[in-house]
Length: 233
Length: 166
Image 1: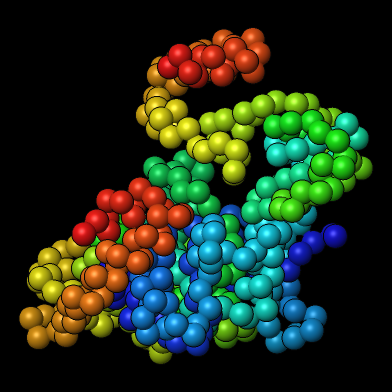
Image 2 (image 1 turned 135 degrees about the vertical axis):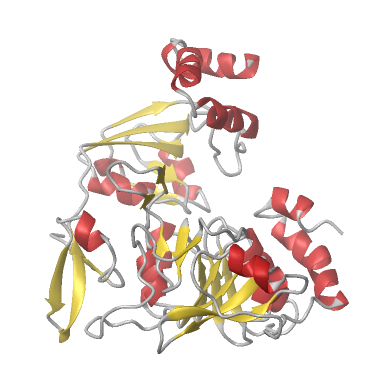
């Protein structure tokens, strides 16, 4: 998943990673240490890559200037239209699950040129037909400006591409070893996938060595537990 | 500020769930709609500083939003790791300074952020937070947490003693 994310980072661009996103941070660091050396990367609370010194206001103001080319968001529920639910499952007054709230995610969904949705578990409870509450809309009516929005969604099972005209997530490639049936069973909305669907190129030895070496070392500054366990050689 | 325009929120369920959030035509781009949110003006905010002086000048964590919160609030109660001279706060190379005009009262409370961290001074108490997360799942278990760490200890020193005894 980190490798799939890394390949989406382009050289020369500004790529930012927010809070609670160790896999995205790993992918972005890997890109920065290989094919995207000339880009600017911003990783929440990383001592080498987080320059904001006046709280979250400075970060949001920077985002509002349109400085981010690529950003990452997630949701408690994610639907086929790219809507993210960070509010609640069920009736929001009597929810079965309450999430922490949308915070700035609706704003950050619309400002960067591309947003990658990520989620480290892929289940029909998360990838739903329609979210119960929309905190961050995947698309908006024509009289609402939207500079960016969903670009892809990356999970442990596959990479989705956001089909802009259809406003839907469609399977771009299935990760190695994942069968179509399993992907269908674990996705709560209809997907077009079969044995002939493209397969995500597996991680190369170089990509894995990067993650388990320099990326792991750098990531330990902000996600020590994750670096130690998930990226151990 | 009477309200703030927030881009990106039109089309979300905030329109339905928060009637106090209004959607208007953007006066600068009348063919576009934008959401407005009212200010949050807390009666009281309680914040923790790295350093404070006797006039209420605070040195706050630069990565958090405590100074914004304090400026928005009517009453600001600040605790600080240490009360120091004004000079020491002025010389500090990092952190955000908040002037005493925004602060109602200040009290010295070493390890006052526990079980969360003061960066560069002490880390998160992971063991304490993990046990809190388990106990907070059930009312009965949570009551034992409250009795032991919140309602029981008569002072912050007693609280810290209860924590280290746990």
